Structures are given as structure tokens and as C-alpha cells.
Length: 372
Ligand SMILES: O=C(O)[C@H](O)CO
Image (cartoon, rainbow, N blue to C red; front, side):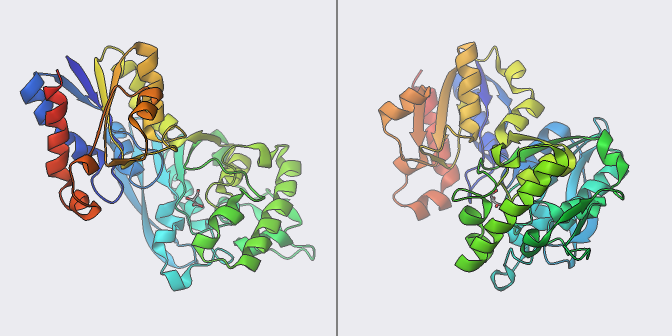
């Protein structure tokens, strides 16, 4: 029997690799199964480790500007043999880098992410995968673009600092000094959400509060995104608001489409491409997946959605060992999952589940093997 282990992380608990370490020996021992590990991620936190499992690159450490223009060391992954770099914007421009008192996306920049991109190009990358999300910013990517050589002017012809509050003042974009090497690089964007750029479901209204903006500032940032999107559309001949995910990471989705000619993709889709997932699983009997929680979001962008698609195409059974589930047995079956169990079925409380994930996950794996 061939079994593929394709877990995402259990957020705040174990990584996908740890999941494999726990489950694989039980499948070997109890079923004599041939097990292949293909850990997945959705583009959010922890994606870099999963990508490295496939790319086998090395981490490059560079000094860049953090969201408040302070020097920090940030890393990205580079694979010399494939010339692919994987950059997580949160490493340079993430909310995790700021104390809560310093968080306000009126004043933050994605400049450091642009510096990471330049560094990767200087290393020799001809393909950059940029994971966006977890950002401290709402600057529509103008910080990143500035690092690449773009300039943004106000109506008096003054160059503006590339931060969220200045989007509304931009009247002119200049590309004369842009690093021309960027044109030869294929850029794919692993996007964590599908929000539009502005409006009630846009970057500012949905995510700026968690980045320290107050209600007035949120309105101001939203107006800035709306205004700037008009400029981007005219300058690059695109329709930013219509791009799914343009509002990801404070408008970085739109910024990457415009300034990098990037292709926005759900993170899971990109990682499955890198893992060569479909090719490697087509003869499997089972795919076992797992993620922190099965819920009604599960089919929209999380790892399991991509797995079910491939499994159904090749008639492979799917099992899910998740942390918890908000779905009924009928809903789970309806999604295309043939076997499902959760850590919370075993644990007496959330605290117990988090403390004893390994023990309970072993039990889930044992139960699965006994079902044959
Ligand atoms: O960074 C952000 O704004 C969120 O992760 C959504 O992309």
C-alpha cells in the first residue's frame, strides 16, 4: 500500500514535518506501507521550511530595513541549482517584527521586502516566489517598489516616503531608475487571502485594524488605496481591483502585479507545483493530510482543498487527522474526505490537546491502521 503524508502545520503546535515524524513509523510498522512525505503549506507562516524541503536551498541573511526603516537581519531561501529564491515578506516587513506600541500601518513600509528581492537577483535568481501575508504594512507595495528604483511624487513634485499614509498624495510614478534586472525574473506570488484592494472587503477595512490603525486611519488608508489603484491601472494598464488577492498584505498583492509583473496564486497551489504533487501521488492508495482545524474555510485555499482535487482526479482515498473540526461527519464526507479523526476527539481540553499533540496524533494514526 502506498500512503502519501501531506500535512499542513497545526498552527501553534506541530509543523508538517513533525506530523510526518510522528505518523510515518506507525504506518510502516502496522501496515507495512510505503510512505512518501509531501508536506504542504498555504503560503502563511512556516511556508519557508516546507519550500526548503523541496528546494534544498540555503538561507541567505541580509541586512534590510524593517517596516519602520530600522536595520534588521532578514533571511530568504535560495537554491543555486534551480536559481529559485523563496522570500517571505514577513521576514522584512512583517507584523511579527514590531512591538504592539509601534504598530501602525499608516507609517510602515515594504521597502525591506524590495531589498530582499534585489539581493536574490544579485545572487542569480531568475525565479522568485514571494510569500505575502502577515504584514505590518498597508503601502500597496510602494516601499518594495522604491527599493527597486521606482519613485513616487506628490503634486508639488516632491518625492514621497513609501508608507501607507502617503498613498493618497501620490500623483506621479516614475520608473526611470528601476533596476532593469527585475524584467528578466519570473515572479510568482503565494498569496494568503483573496481580498480585493479597497472597499469594505479590501486591505484596509479588513486588515489595517490588526496593524494598529484606528477607524479614521482605516478610512484614510482605504481612500489612499483607491486613489493609488487608479494611478497603477493607468500606468501599467491593469485593473488592480479586479485581481483576486490584490488586497493581500496591505495591497502588496496589487503592488506585486504592477511592479513585478507577478502572478498571484493561492499559496497551496504554488507549493503543490514545487512539490510536483500530482505526479508523485498519482499511484497512491491514500493521502493522509492534517491541519489545525477543519472548518468551512477548509475548501477555500487551505492545503486540504488542493489535495482533495488531486485525489478525486486519480481516485485516491483521503484521510484527515486534524486538530479539531467544526464540520459534521456528513459535511466532511461531502468534501471528499474518506476518513477523518481529530485530536480534540481524544483530548479533554484545548490545553491538553496542545500539550499532548504527539501522543494523541499517534493514537489517531493507530486508529487509522486498525480500520483496515
Ligand atoms: O498581511 C496581511 O495583511 C494579511 O496577512 C492578509 O494578507
